[in-house]
Length: 196
Image (cartoon, one colour):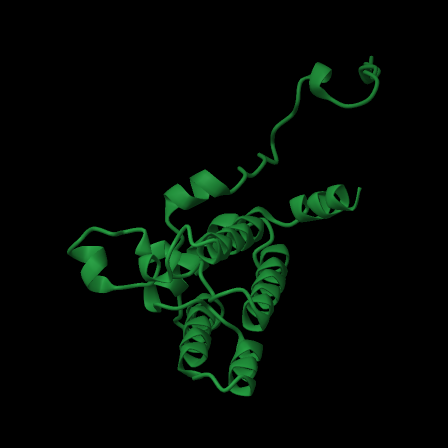
């Protein structure tokens, strides 16, 4: 019974956040069960471009380390902030949200982490360089998407590719569309009285 409630709640999460979180958990589970090795997942330009191990372009963003305290905090923050972004700033703009992920992934070789994760890294005695890189990429995206276009003489430099919009966004309704009477909800309406 509780499992159904958890499943129903998870299915209410926006699609990109749901898919990314599930992929991170499944990747970590595969490593924990020794079906995969972390050495098969990390970003290595030589292996990507010379040996054509292109999956490393994606998998390095899915593995947050072995199961443990750090992994659960990473998942909590990733899930929470991705969901907030997808339901808030990127509501109805799924393609733009995916493009933000691709932009961030193109500029860094480690997972995107917010300021709070940097604090946890410091508390755990880990290097904060990765966290700072993620924060810098996030700020660059924010500047190019929200600040620069609103400046005098500014314009949008980051344009989501059309194929992503076509693939992921729902088409806008035509405001001039008039549905047929059989498509309209409710009982059919009588025609307006004719004037003589």
